[in-house]
Image (cartoon, rainbow, N blue to C red; front, side, top):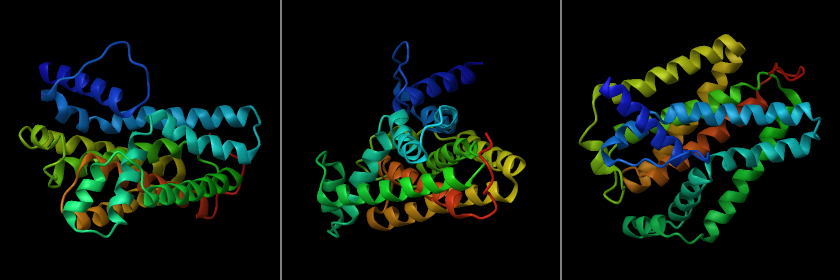
Length: 263
């Protein structure tokens, strides 16, 4: 029972940090940081559900498809409070500087936005808008938005727990001291469940989108790990943004979904 209470409190902390939802009271306990990361996929479930409900509402209101695509692109970051987008911009700034590792780490921690981050943000938004527009125009199975949000955060939880942290990572000491096998298994179980449900819901189309999210995350993590020799919250957020973009692109380009929207 005590462990369940810790998990619930950790989930509440995770919801307060990674989701832009007003909570009735504030909780923070360094000892629960590992539970906060472990329960991140459950936060993804809430974020994905809100994202999906936003799509339902815009479709019900018969909003023009161009505006619907734009609102859905922005809605995802509004729901998360732009926290992962911040990591994406900082990471692109550091990587594209092509400087030695100490300089990259300094740029990664710099709160100012450089030219590389702004250009990368524009490219990401253009691709995301195009993918969302094509998905709205062609697709059905839009509850897959929930799966995209859940799987991207399952990958984040697994990677953040498993890989070596850069010393500048604020959660490194809290995580490395208290990791148990259950902390590693829980996100894996959630990811397997999400993939299975996506197959039951959308068949091989659902599996393809799930694969795109996971492979996109792996590719992004390999890129940042090669550059920084470790992981931080910003780098994990960068990979999360990339993985969700890959899921949306797969949603848009895969054939066989040209009927009306099914929610």
